[in-house]
Image (spheres, rainbow, N blue to C red):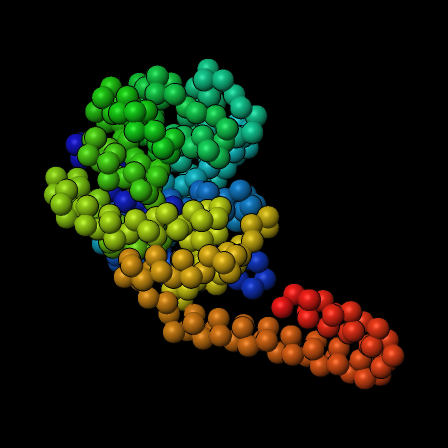
Length: 351
């Protein structure tokens, strides 16, 4: 491994919002400081997990600037790789320039989604961005979200250009990762984009991960990656096994719905997402809590109290509605009879 190559754990950090739907600047600063204290090598603001797609350009720049400001306060270097990808080259260039102005060290640029360019089109896309913005670029391949797969031969052709610092490889295909790893230039980083495949990818020679689970367990996941990179695979496997249920649970619904719920459950942010994303379905709460417990993560007493307050409010609303229904029934006894009798008959028949 080279000293200058990106590596370790870079957290794809969530973006906290307040009750008005605005970026919660204070919560974001606290979150960044905690991540750095826990030992992550870097942070990736405004990616998929950071809901970059629903941030306007000014918010995008604000989030990157806040993360950069907090990282600069650290006594060690913390890499900031800002998400800047869209499916429009001009818009991507404009966002990339904002990220540069905000102080990012490098850019994470996803392959264009929805319009499904060819391999040649994607090569041109990345090179146009590199021509327009003087920052190293990490290419992001996530076919499950974009509908296109950046093939290993294309990645390796892009990697020949020294302006490209690495690839976040999230195809879920270890053969594809192996093809890149065996032929990459020495300076070109390969980072796992799948938390549960970080350990096997590092065993193949990858340098680390841009991770979701490190939002909840930055210290533990960083230790796993450090042990694996040092060749201590028994220790790395133990941590992986402990975090694995949470890695899986984080994708029980679309990312970042579950991880935001978990970080809120830890009392670090409010559980607020931007439309069209919605809060985690209650049917997944128990499995998320079980996975968090197995990872050694406890719910904050404050978060638990807030949940209890919300439940109590909902119960009060139900009781009020029931009381209002009962009052209407008393006011119209004849109408109530015609409704209640068939319901009673159906209940009797179902026993």
